[in-house]
Length: 423
Image (cartoon, rainbow, N blue to C red; front, top):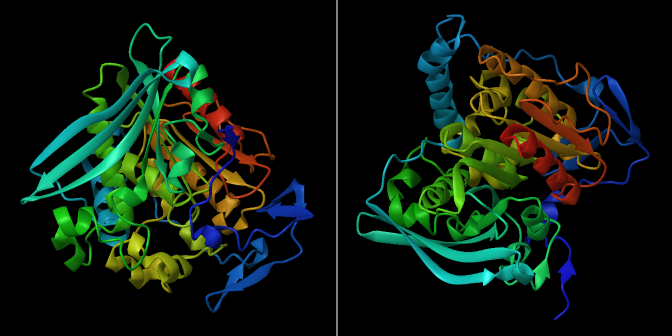
């Protein structure tokens, strides 16, 4: 069978493509970018007007990332870690993503298939099944892992939360995908792993509960602040981290989490909660990912709750038409990852994900990195197209193209990881 190199869209993924209209030019915030300007400034979706006009962004005030709910100014790392960080984490749990259950009864890892000469001898393949038990019930999900055979010590690993077809992460390598270019990553000296999000919580509003939620944590389904699909996907990423700790080929202290779109939202939430992740890459994550909610540009809280309310806890629905009363915004989610490196992306044909609002979120998270004395090299203006920011604790690029995760993205992820992991 011939190898095929492409990106396989998840069945039913039409919703991420419907708004990607061809552009002559693109206006992003106050900066006119060479990609060109979209003539269409509004659209309609699910009975609502979608704003693509920067001049129509309402005036808004972001909650201060370094001021506690009681008005205390955070002045140092100790105050951040003891006061503001736990406060913000609790607010995201209560109002958006749900609180992740703290424990389970047991966890088991089983290597079900192994090939020490995969990729024409370049890599060691392991297919692992992770099984978790709680209250007499169990859930299992598979993980695929390739490690480079040219290694003299444990290696860093990229872990993808795969939200598209499982063919993108084919362990046989008969199918190859730009969404998960495993050979490219192996050639760069890294391991690469993936799990499929729907193996733990199906990505459907009528069946998301069939898996981790109804088997291990059914009480979450009855709580207004209980975790839903994104919470489960993040929980699964942490279980893969548990596995990495047992694998002698993996440098457990250098695990980089990667996600695209809903997977990008999940990656940010995963890293905010689980500080074992050394680095996070979030591709085109948009609303309730990297983009500021208060801008009301592209996908809004109202629209994402209408279409994908099962991703978030019940409390989040209260803010669909009252975003300014939400006690957090997404710059605070980025701040929760500090001092660890974070890298986000946007694309010129993906206005739905609000590129400028995503960049501003990084800018407004910078004060937390400043507390830690981390070098942040974000420009004052929106970066030009295809001008990645690499040598910085907060990285970013705005590339040409559509809502996707591709080889250009991965090449810059590797550069960013090389910089921070000193490789």
